Image 1 (cartoon, rainbow, N blue to C red):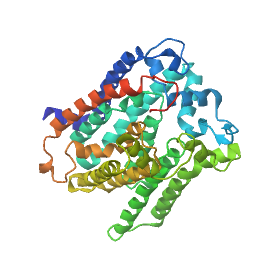
Image 2 (cartoon, rainbow, N blue to C red; image 1 turned 90 degrees about the vertical axis):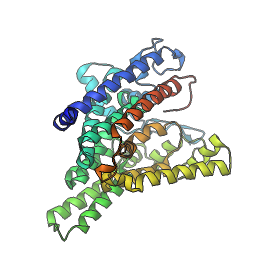
Image 3 (cartoon, rainbow, N blue to C red; image 1 turned 180 degrees about the vertical axis):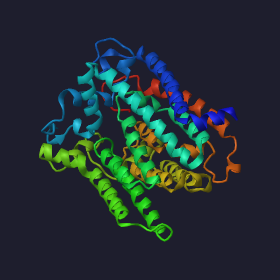
Image 4 (cartoon, rainbow, N blue to C red; image 1 turned 60 degrees about the vertical axis):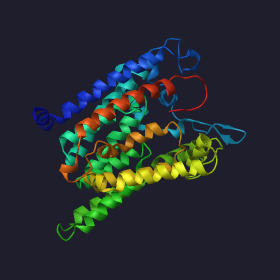
Length: 399
């Protein structure tokens, strides 16, 4: 009971403390992994291997290029085919890093990773509030612990945009959950320059407005609130197209963003839904088995999300899970980078720890489930770091 009282009174302190402890674990693993690196395969390597170099491998190199060189005014092409370039990466995070580097004189690796670490702490604090409002402080703490121990959680201290994206996403979801339309619109608008989540977030916004409209008889909607809701929906729409529009304006190529994104695909084309099928065929063989496993994955996710064991998370978080999962299925080239993208599906952890039932009497063994998931996450995290953060070749993009 004393622990429950502590969480009720000091929830934010507890979740941030747990987050930082788990980030220390990740830092130790990353330092150990650094000793296994081949210096010739690390971007900006000076033959010295340490934790800070580990924080900006893979996509971190692109953000460092943006900080140092900006975005190209012309798309790089070889034989008329657009090559990989900076326009695939949103500008808010590198802009923040560049500003802090100017103010502090620090290096990209140190400033970028510490910024991600700080934003991650802010994100888990906001996550705890979002979850607490639906299922209470104890479950909120459990969800944050499982999230912070999850296999891809080291990116929360790397030079990646996950931490920033989570702050803005959770801010928008929290505002929508509370019917605060203008803050939700501002957070959604900011995602347009930080992380490509505006499209599924727009679906959540539509559902939130629809739910408010359904309750208009009990709580009439006044004109200022109508204006705020419309403004919020417009912000979501702008967020979905602002970065592709900027890329087109700066390069003079209408499809600059999509052409750049397509350069990461093996065939140089973006075809909705097809990459999941192709990658499952590659992993499990063509035909029946790949289709069966993909079908089981989709049905299993729907069962977890839609069943009564997920009712307590509420319509906002549930809609986000469904909309974001559909978005990933449509546009993602499902591969090892999928690990990082799954961080944004954190509400599903409410179900994983057994706290998604509305009847609290049915929430059994939440503490033990949390303990098991944290242990599994830490073990899987070690595998993830050793498998995907050890660079064994100079091409590819595992994370």
